[in-house]
Length: 250
Image (cartoon, rainbow, N blue to C red):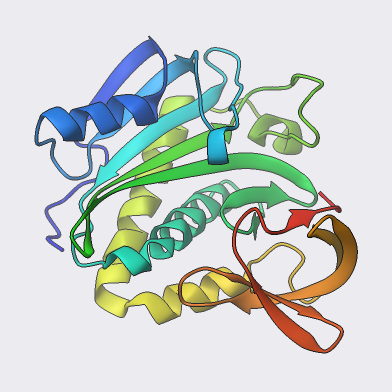
């Protein structure tokens, strides 16, 4: 990857938009935007989460952004590498504000047992490779109240007592994304995977999960190279895809 690629240059800014990810997908479908282009909005009317879920945030209090990358050095089967990349970058950005977090597989960012950030990655494949990747990030920054339907949210303000400049937070996240993107190119997948596994929420703890509509006890050990969760149950290790497992201990 060229070191000249700067994440956040350019940045396309909106007061209100349906979805930054949808806009980014339209952009790569109809033009050839620079790698590193960021779409940033103060408010999303149709923010999206994993597998069709919604992402809700009040106007002007959260970081709502999507990043366009062109990771054509990755094969299609390596798509989970991007989950690792973004999760580590957001966690590192939060650590720069003295906020310590873990990664809830596959790519939610948690403080203790509360969610501070959700990530949605959408890839455009070409042949056996990845042509474009849209990295959507919804980070709770200054929000101090949430919809009661959300089970366990928190924000940077709630955990620190500080009101943050969202533009500064955006710039910080972009810097850390760029650093981890460089690391992926220069150091390879294994080092990032090792760091990701060490930061997994509930890793090496016996906890309750739902698999096949049955409550089970298991211990998260790590992930496979394609991102399946490795869960130890009754002395055996199961490899699970997203949505095959539900966390009971949110």
